[in-house]
Image (cartoon, rainbow, N blue to C red; front, side, top):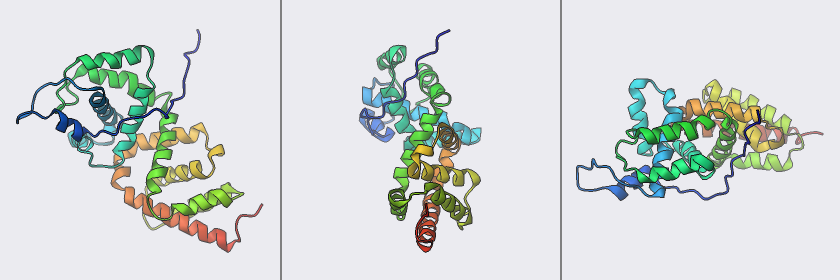
Length: 261
């Protein structure tokens, strides 16, 4: 039996950054607004990206709190939800064949945008064409995307330039990474084990990309899928812990006169 051809995702195609709140504003009618509407391509992709994000992460919270999770995604209350929504938009850009035809056919349906999970056909499409591949053969790509996304997000905070300098000057990245991991363990920020491991993977992917293998990205993808809400809630603490460890590692390298061959 021949193997199914596999194409790595192309992230170069443009995507929309429309929020769910913007969709609601565009479709708002006389109050109370509880009607079904035809949606544009841009609006449909926002609706799909929202459902995808909920479907990928709802198991992180108990069933009685899942309505609150959906509300937080719809209202854009946690910054890191954008990670999965952006990945979903790239997935849609890479659909082909019957999957692309199914996406195009969804434009013929009217949607109640106040109840995004109410359309069974739309939810089935997200599960079968987007979620299934993300949690299986594209898990490593989700992890790769997540490390790059979080690297950029954390670069908005002080101290990331230390890693960039190390990347330029370090002839022994494994030594730098080992010291970073030690300093992260000693930090006073009380990171959970999965948080510390994810930060290690982010730094490894940034500092030593040639040695960051598919297994690393699979692990990163699993951590982000299972803990995105918690990571978002603690994102400032994660940034502070990373900043502390990077600064300490930089000091250690200077004391040693830099890495030795």
